[in-house]
Length: 230
Image (cartoon, rainbow, N blue to C red):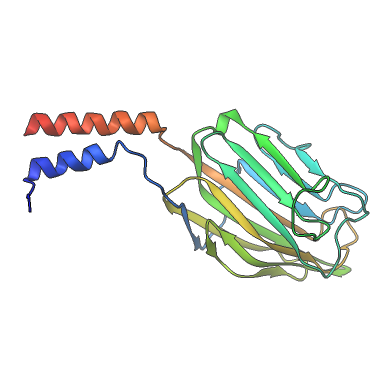
């Protein structure tokens, strides 16, 4: 077996860093509150005669954002779980928000999905993803989420069965800077207002993601330095 001396081994590692490697982004649940302001907010709410879902991004900011208001006032089936999906592409800065209002197993129907491109977020990831759930205690109307899965990790169930908000913060630990959050959402009843019960997924505290070209240059620079040392 051929053995590498110290310089050759370091040079090999530098050369390997030029090639892109498949990575799966990792988030862990942590205590605390999300840093404000957030960059992206994907929301579902008891809209009654107004909209039921909305996506706020730098490309489509508040107060309008991209609204989802399917047929029905409201469109929700109270007491029944509906699937949701939030996705973010860190290379392009594209976010999408999908709600399966009619519970048919897809997001292909009218007003079930919106997509926003934010050039200012291109090549940026997020250190924080957070959940916010809030029901209403007058009249009693709750919100529940099952199987909340963030980049492949199932973090379980969350709920707010009264007016007290439930929050959960997730912190980025490495890997791919893309985001995929899925699960199922249920509102138990109308809260008698346009905003409750409600559910938010938010992303904030952004960081720069090195582009493939920048990584290649970095790897080549490291390789050149180590060759000079050898």
